[in-house]
Length: 208
Image (tube, rainbow, N blue to C red):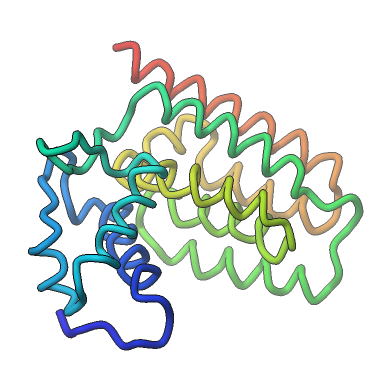
């Protein structure tokens, strides 16, 4: 991989790249992460790597024990289920109070169309709808909640899209997107129903 350009804070660049690899399951759970190796790979010093890893630990994608290990965390644990519940509550706050503008409807439709080109069991469509709802909220709190809950959720759903399928799948997500454009009340009901089924299914996986 080429060294990172100095456009943003290097820790942000490293975080984005590592987070993307973890969400896409390019790095398997249990894999040891070495600061020196990552610094060499990204062409940066150890400091931005440590900062990025600290954020990934807070997001639940990486776990660490001082002087023992820093490794990719398991896909599912109790905090995964908690993250889903918190993400659901946050998205409830982000739902529009009335029909969205034609311009936003076009943006949503574009995001949905792009996501549906992916053959991933609905994971990209889930991400598209969630990111649309959480876009430009102007709330630092919502941004922080997103940073803590969304990467963990996306990693699970990209690895196991069957959870999306059992919660209603792409058809239900398309219905949710359509309701967002025209009927906020129906959108809330669909969002609540989808997340209720999703949390139940993931919770059952954890208990097996």
